[in-house]
Image (cartoon, rainbow, N blue to C red):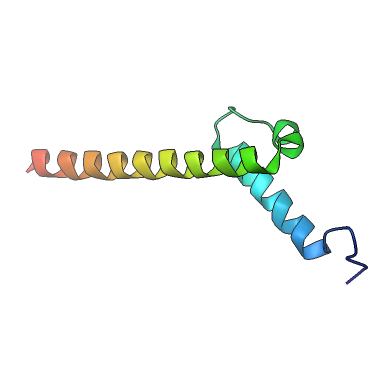
Length: 74
């Protein structure tokens, strides 16, 4: 591990880039990597939470739709 004074460790850099990739990939084009990289941290965190909520709702809706289609086929 290199120097960490006034900087991020290599582990933190990897984590940040994983978050940026995940947000860019899962936002379906709403954000690109460069926008997220230059976005203020507080705003990136806000958007990440909003994206998580939207994806959870989508998953719930898909699950209930699949449940409904299974019961209507019987």
